[in-house]
Length: 430
Image (tube, rainbow, N blue to C red):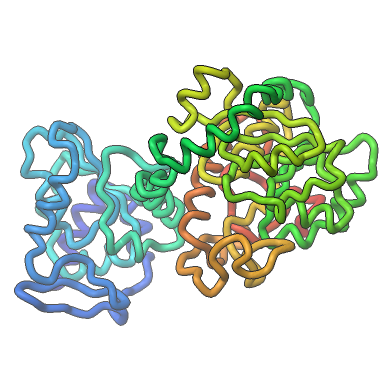
């Protein structure tokens, strides 16, 4: 490997001067890098190999083969050692290859060690920082090593890439042909047929502010203030997700509406006592015994999932948006009820204060804090631990917010994940 930075830099400065100005300010990675040899060689950064150490070109050809062969435009996330862009450019039918930098410091190091002019000079190449885009582009290949090594600036795009890559895996438990799914829908059929359509709630609170209350640890900071606001008149509408319901009631706060979608939600989450004045909005996979015991009015809707295809045809009901978490339909309900201002509580998508949820013990609602292997940036720009599915839920909420520009979204805390598209509600954020 030779010091080729000057030659590479001349190409980048000529073609992408603004990007070059940023690139030369990236920190040095040389102390964290080492040469790893096998049948060939590669770089290892903090113990993570950027490519195969045996046959980088063969690996790149396998990666290229996963992309549609007839796609005129393709996107590569991560620069690696330049092997994948080089292989893709061998295809004369490809008109444009967008290379999105996931770690600027790694890319700068690569430019210092290897001649990259062969692909940087190609007019079909467009070079960008991944984090400059609001979302990911298709079709794409994301280099596995740099999904792990993405820097803070590009972390949002990294999260969306991982969410997309894992989509089929995450949907595996919602197979319409699953015996468990079929049985649950059969058990819920009577309730679905007799309960009110969630559409009856739409447009009933036009112009009213809505608080959507989730169960992230930061909710614990707001119980007292929420209880005081709950006694005011007029006041915002309180929509609670199912797992936040019990902690709210334990602190003397009765939500106006509860939303539940998960088939695993039971009586410990939604105790039916004193619920006569609280409507429950649910999807048909919810536990029918829990639904039947609820004393208040019940409203049912569907998501766009194929799971509900047959039910949707037999018993038409309105849809709520679901992106993996109950917070998505809760927010969508608020929007469809007519809210033009929504403040999120406990929407942390992370484990601030070394806790998983407000009002629940570590591991009560899923993996404990000690099992967290991932991170997001919080409202102060600091890394906070999380789990993989939380990052996916965050991505889907951000996409939803981006799709509703006429609604103002606010976050009540800086402790949890920074949610793109929200601003901080100064009534609650110090």
